Image 1 (cartoon, rainbow, N blue to C red):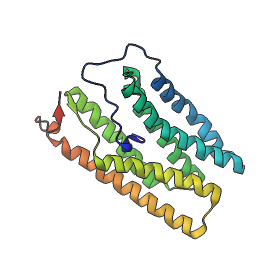
Image 2: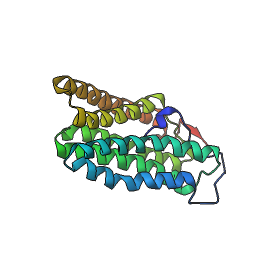
Image 3: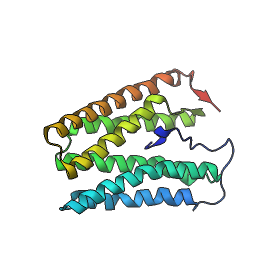
Image 4: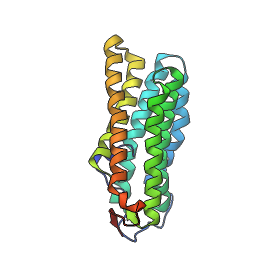
Length: 207
């Protein structure tokens, strides 16, 4: 999840569900989803101002992920909609960015497929674990992976405006290699932690 890396736990207390769906945190989450088409429009539009706006929208959307989680917990407004929509919003935002970068020639397809495949596989693993009443908490590697993905997208957006020449390309490669490596390592770690799930003897925390 984007900016879950800051350590904000969005899970509600056991058995607690807020009665109101359209809470402030949920409105922020919905705004993040609705901002994705606008982000993509500015990303593909010609002109310096649009590059700046694309960078600003992505940065604001990433920050909003931490904000809605904090508000949901502090105001006791965790809802089923928020639990469902928040990770979806994060993955849609990341997918929109990296797939667009392939079309723009900023990234090649292979690392993007690796990054997105990891997201889908871990999401599927979490769904399977939930069916078995198993909680898979975020790991430090998962949080680092999230930060690396945010950093990669923000750096590419920044270089599209500022332009850093050969140095910028080298730094982009570093961000990309780091993002791919952490995607693979953190993904493998998640599967290793619940390896018992596939043998009928779950090893993760259960409720």
